[in-house]
Image (cartoon, rainbow, N blue to C red; front, side, top):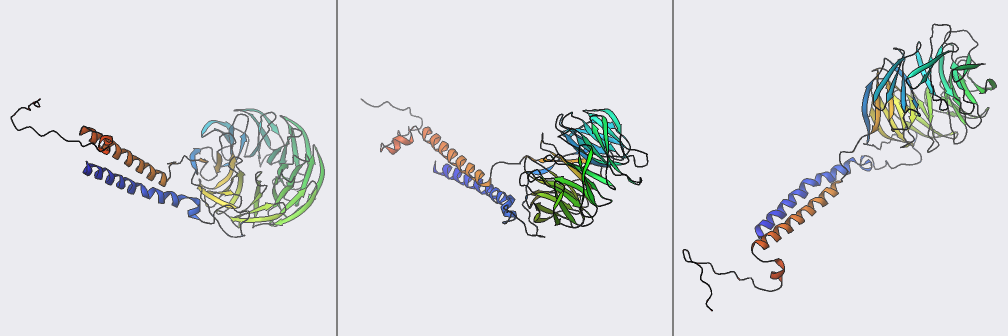
Length: 450
């Protein structure tokens, strides 16, 4: 019995020894071990890089779509993602990780917006060499109307206050004046004058204004309904704008002057220097930060109010970003390095590989996926949370090994004792267990003499 118990204990020791490396693997894979300073802090020093890897993030699917996907929008009513394919002049409709439809649209589609009141998706068709552009109006999987607008529509924004959709007609090579087409459902209800080369429109839900950036004459047209409330001078070549619903300000990205103009109503309340060639911006409603994407300096300026609280290095050629309201991350597409930098506050918590020339990203709040449009490979990379290969830590496996060893040893001991005809209890009580004398070979066992 002793030799068997020793063998069981040795087997248990070998089991624990085999499971011990899992402890080191768990420790090595923790964010703290990768970088002891990776615990979130309120600011990050300008120009410094911090990485706290989140191993749960990854590409869960790569979806082929049309040629040169350039923009996408999420429809919260049917949970579809509409991907605009510029060269093939189609829209790929995605449901989760599947393409459920491919629908033809107008000439040179380039942007889209969603109207949450009527459930329509509006796709702008630039038609650069025609006399006017159009807007394809989607309801689910069907185009319900095609609305003529101004020359070279470049973007659109939905006003939740009056239910209008504002289409910025940038003009391309057309002579001025440029304008903004105002749609209600499928009807054109107004055409509002704008500055030179209006490239984007942004809605401010606090004051009800729509801000149209005019890249050609470096100002912003502030629209109220179907009229111009003000024209506000900003920096050179304003490309895009984003609205901060925390403080009610609008952040205008001035690409040529490397700064951001901060507007409150019709007044400029700040001009914030950022990186080189800022291209776009996104607002994080959880921490109140505005993330400005600097394409040529390969970093992101993080603004709070009118101050820069961090400058975060990312990949090469960052060009856009989207915010994930579920995990609080900001996903930055890097067009030259073919990957996506994932930011949490002022920390980079991951880098996820994508296709060729990722140009845009869209968040689906229903399934929690981030859809990355790869302009150069005609695909969409779907980023989501990958299942962990194991939920048990290394020390947990060692504890399991010890428990198994003890249980097996106890079972073996009980079995051996029972085989001898006794029990551990009788032996420990001091009663001697005297075996019967063996019988002689060939002689039957005699009964005891009375």
